[in-house]
Image (cartoon, rainbow, N blue to C red; front, side, top):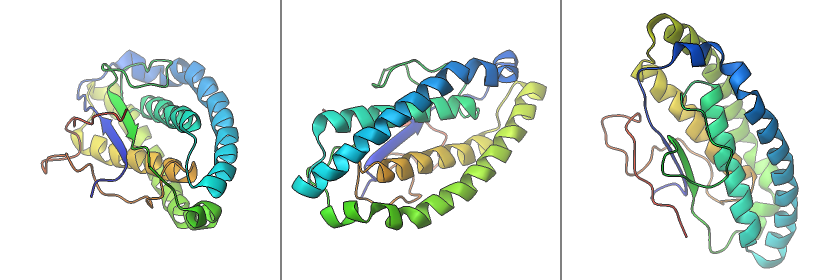
Length: 206
């Protein structure tokens, strides 16, 4: 069964040396926007927490906003950490030209008990994400030097970086109550067995 948080990152072997060298400067406006949106999403999640405990449902308006913030933050993270090379747009929705796509299946109902205990339940996943994030940061640093030297990102590096960003999206979605499914490492169901670096088609929910 496919995980309800779908992440697709298109692999681009050739990279811009100039964009890579100036990445931290270029990404600064997005980091500011992502921080502000993250604060707003956290407030929305707190409201949704009470609503889910009362009704077992995530308010649709809040779900769309929070999932949009998740989508945007993953796009920014991929650009910052060199998994992607195209400057991301300042929008929360899916766009056909986005090389990084994140889609969350909207659940019909959510578990009140799982929602109530979400923070303690998420500790193992957050711990794994912490160490995976450290490894991903070191890999991105190595990728930075590799791109500056060769103008290319090796596919092996990309596959590990993609795994880290996919798991981050799943853990964040779980923490933000968008899904009851516990984060795990399964690749997308529609991915071919050749590797994770191949673009996959994910149809957004309506």
